[in-house]
Length: 206
Ligand SMILES: [Zn+2]
Image (cartoon, rainbow, N blue to C red; front, side, top):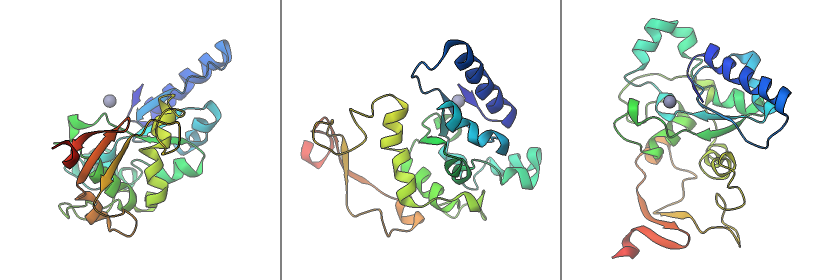
């Protein structure tokens, strides 16, 4: 399900809580997409209910939508957008959301990753921060794209890690991400993409 406001997120959590009470634990990992605003009281409920918060990347830093958010929500509540670190500290499982080309020109995940670790606009187009205290470290951010994304789809034994017996799905970059600034990360270009051990994008295809 998809929820942007804190009331909608609470309705989603309530719905799963109610179904779990009547039907028991099905093993499904229900997911709330966007989770832009989640009331602090609801942060621990993701862990309690085994639910996943799927975060929408293009709003993690000042962007064309931010002035509108400030108008409607006020400056203080706007800064509470996408509390990734708070949710993480409350034990919530998080993934990187892909339901967002509707609000952005492209689906470039590197821009989202840059925003996750800096909460600044990686191109310097809009000043300031969105939720500066919610920035996380790169080593905390990458699992949202890999192991946790796989888990949210029930594929944790298939993909998301490089390990014998797992699907060899990986990308090759020119240099390691660690040590790069958010602005450099936003400009990352993938050299090659491998799926099930086969190059599906890049120079080895030629
Ligand atoms: Zn949506």
